[in-house]
Amino acid sequence: MADQTRFDKVLTQCKQIGQEHLLAFYAQLDAQQQDALLEQIEKLDFKHIPAWVEQYVKKDGMLAIPTSFEPAPSYPAQPKTAEQKDTYRKAHQLGETLLRQGKAAGFVVAGGQGTRLGFDGPKGNYPTSPIKKKTLFTIFAESILAASKKYNVDIPWYVMTSPLNYQATVDSFEKANYFGLKKSNVVIFIQGTMPNFAFDGTIFMADKGTLATSPDGHGGSLKALADSGALADMKKRGIEYLSYWQVDNPLVHVLDPLFIGLHAMDGAQMSSKALLKAGPLEKVGNFCLVDGKVTVIEYSDLPDEQAHRTNADGSLVFELGSIGIHMISVSFIETLNAGGGFALPFHKAIKKIPHIDAKGNPVSPDKPNGVKLETFVFDALPMAKKSIILETLRSEEFAPVKNATGVDSAEVTYQMMIDRAACWLEAAGVQVPRKADGRPDCVLEMAPSFALFKDDVQSKASSVSTIRSGDSVYLE
Ligand code: UTP
Image (tube, rainbow, N blue to C red):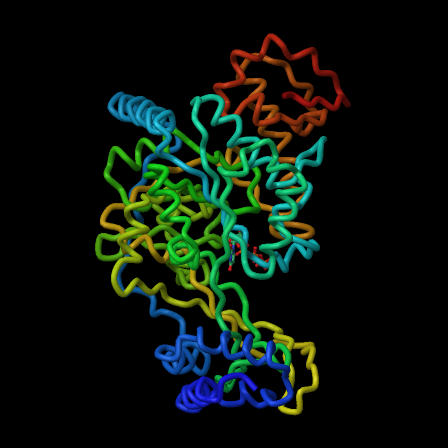
């Protein structure tokens, strides 16, 4: 048996918070398993678990909706006035300077479980591009490589995984030889976890020697960056701005000079891209102002009458949806983690959680039996002294692969990748055959090495051969 004093201490701590069942099978484990179990339990947040159980597990628990909130202001996708055009031009220039100076890095959160897509393995390995079937990780890596070439600087890439998909992610990067990036410029790290609770507040055991846990949500990234050493790595490299995106969106502009520039020019700490919602009830968070602070109110929390409110011109009052694209100042991540750290609110998800019962027999529930708690990164926005929002266009930058079929599925993403390539080509004067319904009558794939932005196509247009109906055209 492992050290008795250590065991006694852990048992006492567990008893104090009503979780002593976690050690029920301890005597049946070998020394190594005992050690691993004690280590897992020692890492639990004993101080806060009772309050979480009361607030989130036993009660409905979610945050109260603020009593008063208004729509958040934003920079439009296209500058309208002469003054705005000037601001955008200067911001773009500043963003490019910061990129050239090596002050910006990419950051993808890829620790999710991707249950809706049901893909075996890290979602970043999902084959997504229309012709070459490049994986999401490949597309991002090629974009970073193209930006590194454009700005003549090595741009580091931080990749957050969960304990569940860390090794598989590292293996796929290794196998692909880091997709052409220098291994030393790719930092793959692991996010934190949260225990899974039964409805009565007890923590589930996955097996006799392991607690049932799940990744602590994309909000966990702000802490994991510090805990993993990624923050220290950024500081060593002189990185000041972290461009954050989600692993499921192949259209994202991974390093957008305009966004970096506006964020830096305004002295913002954490900023967001937004798009105009497709309808009042679209399942995206709503950008609001609460006590003057940019705050995202979840679609499920925004009262229907607020969601449907319209302006005189018919547009929605709460029209800006959150799409998981942020610019985060490295100094902000440092401030958040300084001293006693910070706490984001939890969001509760009622899920089917496999576990063992009191006799140690495995249980695979066929209906939801417990609670998973996650934090969301946008809940850090109100903690920022300054936060700006830049609107973007759905067709330009948002085609997440979330579901196997239907809305936000790979099929939709496939078409949107072709549509965007067609628009970019046409904007540069290249003719694209279209069907009667307006959709491109060809399959197009534009590699990041060909263009990262619409304007990049201009100089390449003359090299594109005539595109005919039914063609498959890969541009690199
Ligand atoms: P989603 O909310 O789409 O969750 O994550 P998911 O786990 O990937 O998919 P479902 O809900 O199980 O189908 C949005 C982004 O946040 C990351 C995901 O990898 C994705 O990029 N994420 C989510 C994390 O990095 N860690 C988490 O704990 C949760």
